Length: 296
Image (cartoon, rainbow, N blue to C red):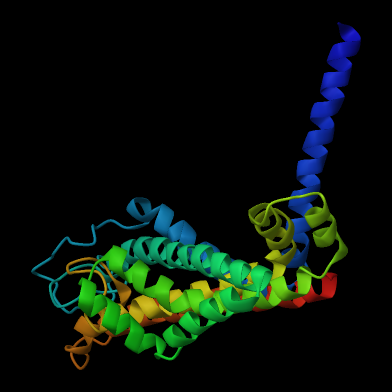
């Protein structure tokens, strides 16, 4: 019994060390890059603000103070109020929740669709590759903003349709990246060994190829989250994002623009929120990319 317990405890300890080793491997490129740490700090700030929104804001995003319309920063309203007397800090904070859910979700959906198409085209080649690539080329022929407008106008403004629009626009670029990586990896010896073992194409694509291509894909995805944040803000500004009165940063800028000469703060704060989050994500992705290339 004692020997069995010792063996079991050793196995558990080995698993813990292995897990900690994997965590250290993931954190090493981030901790080695000052640029990545600065970006992570900015993004982390917005993540914490979004999580603890009810604690860091004394007002709700829709609460109105009719005695404090279009006011600047004060002790009652830290960032001021908009034209309806709504607290700008509360709307920025709760708007962070929306954008930090929609942007990563949109990129994740783009990754699933794009990676699948890229793996299929790159692994099988031939007419399958040609068909997939020509369809993606047709989608990429449209400017991204125009494609967003077409999809949102056709489906109507909503959170789901924003995700669909960004997914459709982003999937071709990811598919091209995954395809190029697949064309290189499929020539490796371990892929030939898997084929000789009789492994199915689905197994080879998603178990052998995709994990070995994850580095560039993860870095590209980080950059795309920043693009998605900007796209969501653009759609909100054009009135094609979340329907009012949702605390959407883009729509806040659009509404505040009408009162810019009376209350500049209503435009400034959501614009600063969008730009800071995008800059943070781009810094994190750039630092991660530099360190990843160094570790290769």
